[in-house]
Length: 256
Image (cartoon, rainbow, N blue to C red):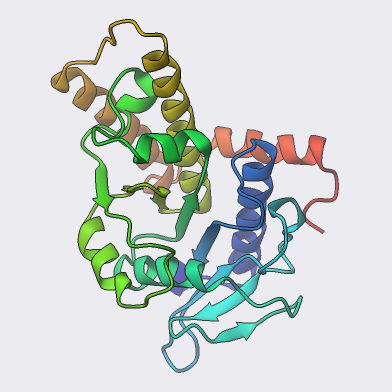
């Protein structure tokens, strides 16, 4: 957990967070300069909560470990290598989650077309396939309140999230919590595939084959056990290693 981090593990966290930004851009899941992936740092010297966020105005494919912005829970910028500041709406959502959920090292928020589409229908994500079954029973929902600039919305986001790790922000997008950046990124990729598959399946005009609840729950538990082996059991994460190799191949020098 972040409170026990050394300088080496903080460096690795910066690398992983920058990798998540680059991967989101590479997979076409970014939204110009908007949306965010944040990571929780150890508390500051006065006990203040701190987290890393992307510099405002940079594209996701411009984020590096060294240009990430450090922000505290009040919205004060602690360290800003680019002098670009940070996005106020990103602070509202991410600080709320980080302050309430200490099990979350990473909070990932996207506005993909498929994710926004699924967040804009009453039923949300249906258990239509193995990807989406991973999230069965795991969703929280938060109703749209406009662009997230009102700090009072933080309490409502936290209350709606509860103990869930995945949230559909109604008419807005998706929010995911990970015990590591790698876990959050894997959730994001599988959720994006799930949303795309749902839009495609329902767009065929045929009868959807929704998985029975017991089978969907069984599949979700299988995914959870596999993730727990990595996050709690310390097993190697071959999928994250493969993603980092992809970046090294596609974007040499991405980590600075």
